[in-house]
Image (cartoon, rainbow, N blue to C red; front, side):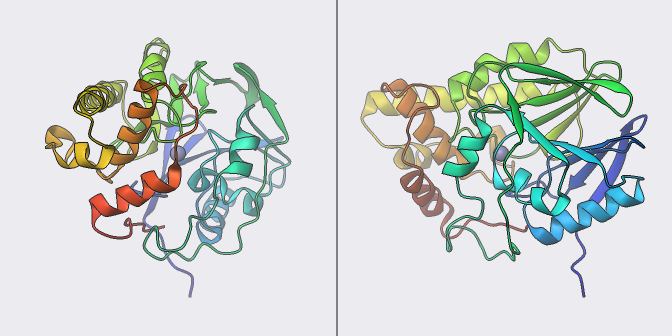
Length: 304
Ligand SMILES: [Zn+2]
């Protein structure tokens, strides 16, 4: 029997649907579906084949036909592993995403997360890319794809903005109730992206993970990123490593967010930036994830 998943489809604007996967922790991402008689659109897919099939079933129920376009908000496997299952006519992303997909791991190395039935994942890379902005007509309305010029959650984060509907699919530039994760992007670059995000005229944000929210979600994200940066500065000054620095602090208001072990990965990134690695430059991901496991006390909890 097929597994049932804890998901909800919300019509966040006229004909614009948000597909919410609870509880928004590791690999439980949100997607967007905009049905249209001519050409329907997906914003991202899902982490596993079974979850992508469930998303596709729901999209068909909403009126999505055979002709679909897709936007990848970034390269991470939770947002892209199901691309081949959705099988869009074309897939568009920021220009760094194809290479990030090739260099990253779609399915994480065994033992890093609690066991997941990923299915037979086939990498489906973008068909065309853009550098800073692209305007598409989606479901008869204007959709603006924007990259803010900085590495942030990853190198190639794009948002999908519907100005007439005041709706923003923020990808993983917004986590609602989950810990922001900058290991593969830049803590400083994410902070530098916040002004541009806040300048958009938006009523409803669909974050990459968590429930739909308003612009105030960025206040907590900014406080968290500044907390990480301050802690990284202290750790560099004290000559201690990311794991030791993470263990030395109380996460305070952030302790209740999902996946708090991301503090270790975020410190790896922030400390690399403070000690000379360019934003978005090389950081040893294996060592960072290993220390996140140590902080967590075992494989990271994944319910995908
Ligand atoms: Zn992500």
